[in-house]
Length: 151
Length: 183
Image 1: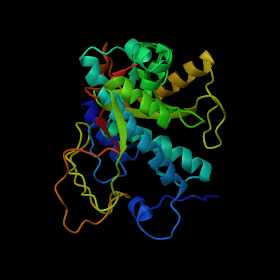
Image 2: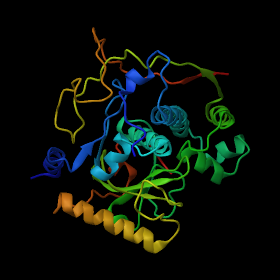
Image 3: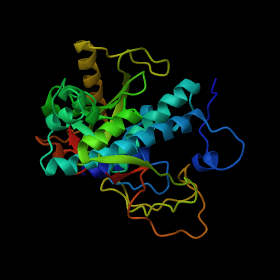
Image 4: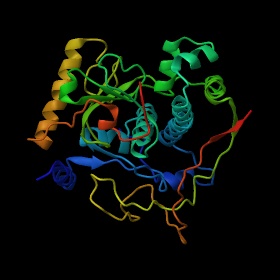
């Protein structure tokens, strides 16, 4: 018996008193982790170019090199404490929360990756599509859930 | 016919599906194509809330690659640790497991790169414990089960892309052009 049907993603997370599905909540939880991972690892790669090594980072945050390697591989077991440790150890920064609304974002300007047949997305083609009355230009950067400030 | 043409053909036949981000403004920087088996996991419907939750997490992990965000990659079999992509034995075969480790049960998608930044995921197996919504047994640390999973993936690849083999290379950038961390 099917008990959990896919729903239109953005209509589901929109305002109202309806329940947001477990699938969407889990998706957004993992997406948040992925964005944080992206944010931290970009910082690490930047500092690595300036000479920071994994061993140095491990010493700075008082963890074994093996643990640091695991932490840098994926955000699976990260906690707020892990984030704080990594950020100060990598770039002497601290976390500063920020967020943005999921709704009313412009549709992507879908040029297609190399292996995709060029195609314009339409309302009927994607479950996640929403009507945008006056589409704004596609942003050049995506906002992070967390931004950092230099200490 | 190029492998790109073959992919387009398989998509038009309904044998492959292109994974696109659910968020309409997320960029598509890399390509991921999946078999019907995997598409059903990420697109639903789901048998119960437990499956819906796990598959929601899996989809977000896959979109991390598609949207061009940072991903961990390992080119050393048996040493992938927590990397999202792990090259499997033998490296010359170009078969990877895409590793959705968290939360338990961990899932492994088997596939290969059609080219740099273009991953094709073909089969799925649970890592350590049985999963109701997957027919395959957990891989655990059983070398025979891993070898079987790799063989099944290669067989699926041949069905779809003969005579093309998975893309191979000696460097991480042969597989992912930018924004990766070699684990």
